Amino acid sequence: MPTDLVQTVPPNPRVVDDQARRIGEHIRGLRRARGLTLVQLADRTGLSHPFLSQLERGHSRASMVSLEKIALALETSQVELLAAGDPQPRDPDDRRPDVLRSDEGARGPFSQGEARLLVHGGAHAFEPLEFTGSNTDPGAFYEHREDEFLYVLGGSVRLDLGADEPLLLGAGDSAYYRGGTPHRWCSPDGGRFHLIVVKESPTRGGAS
Image (cartoon, rainbow, N blue to C red; front, top):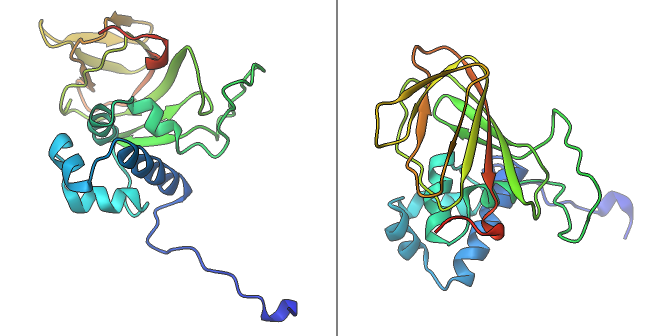
């Protein structure tokens, strides 16, 4: 066929971006593998059927809170869903060192901030994430089976672990909490914070 007659299919203008498309396709695949309909997934997550439909088609981007709810319903992890958006996933058998540049890493929004996965998607013993934000509303608690470590690189955060009074952490402070511990954080004054959060990989046996 003459090259001037070749037609290319334009990208779907409703797709947010390639990362949203990849994450949506991955969620759809997991949902179908679990034998769930969109309505059933909506019931399990508390998220609306239309939103989940848009998410699976890449027409919407899930927040980290929404990813956590979907992950629990699909028996996976929030980070595993986020990692599905990585354009350069690692082969599970690739034992070479993994270098991630500052402009790389799958990203997910939350409130007034953003989370970035600090490794390429694939099998890892632990899952490091970078969080930046300035939200003063901590939102809903996160709770998962895996242990987690939090380190404050800059700014200050109010860390709420559910049982006791929230803790005020500043640059250089850290916290470690076991799987099953409710946790959430926010800025105490609207200032910007910068965190490193390291989660135990679910594939390595998180706490039950």
